[in-house]
Length: 165
Image 1: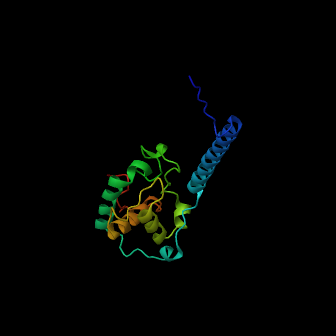
Image 2: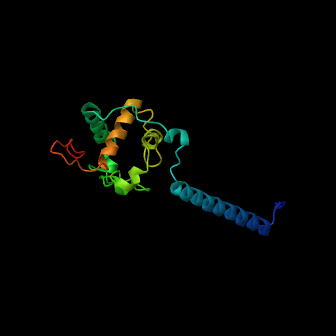
Image 3: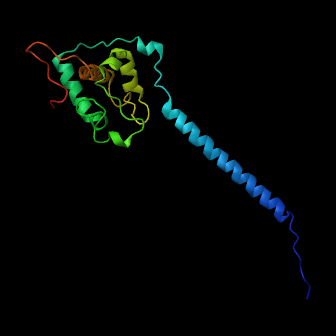
């Protein structure tokens, strides 16, 4: 009988070095992915200057407010909550946490165009509503979002509150 010997083209030492190198590359890719994911979540919600300048074409009427309230309770309440404080039943599931729409100082510094852009474009975890809602519906939501941070009415004739749904 003849004995056949198979010669290996790579030495065990070379094979071990290759595996170590591949493992190091894999760890580096995982690390870079984690850093990029963390960086993306911490980025500011950049709104183009052109979008900031847009004015709401809709008036704050009872019909627009009513339509917006329905839209809000259908699409936004789960995360932003009944009063816009970002305390909806699903809020704790999201990072970043849903915005507090009742924060007066913050909302005073944000234009209607910025709100419209954010509603339209979304940002994880918030979905974009550009294709889900019409332009008028998104502007109606801007009106409704503004109502969360509006100062309380001093007269007896108060508009319906956002929570009264």
